[in-house]
Image (cartoon, rainbow, N blue to C red; front, side):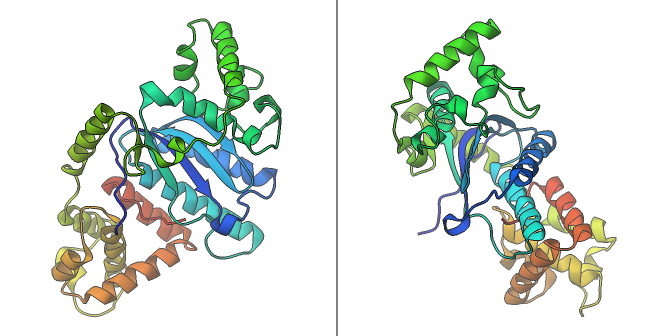
Length: 318
């Protein structure tokens, strides 16, 4: 059975979990964590998202992310792809770093976000790595508690405002709230949700989320926008793009178009093959080849990312 698409709409909040492939480590030293934090900051600036909480473990990461207009899939694939590139270059390794598809659960903010933030911050306690979240330096707990400087890309204001207007009082009440959850074990609802493994909330929240997500789907791109963007990037016209032969840059442009179409949720390679008068399997193979090249060719990667940004299509795989 095909996977259900993620529910996306501006302002949606998710519990995101990135796990190492086959349970392997994803952080090997302090420099790796610093790079991951840098990618978080760049993502906040580039994609206009908010990060309400984080916890870096050895083999996985927990995040509470609130998106803007850009879908979570684009954000996480970009982060995963770039961090994997960094690790593979640094440690002279190849292959995937993260385990398949990241986990993302849409959260009802009013009823669950505070509890999710607490749950994320208590992850090291549940793992018996520390006895209290204050002892764990690789989460956002200390930023809420006021015992360390807050990273500029972390949002704490919303959660603290739920406890009190005064900052000191809010931090104290937040601390008491977290202490109340110290005996809490693994919560299946924060991993499986209440609706098809995609969302956690009551029926009213689910209905509203489905409606908002459907509204977003109706505003998706069409094939003409992809063709126009690729042609502009490679300084070609449509006839040149469809022309016979394997001459550059038209061949590369067709491969990039195939990659963009393959990774969109609204388009199909069949439609592109018909437009380009090309074989479907050939386009599929070209998309895979150009994706691999983008992983090592920084100029190509930048070119493809510019087009994907404009079209709001995720093209980078972790």
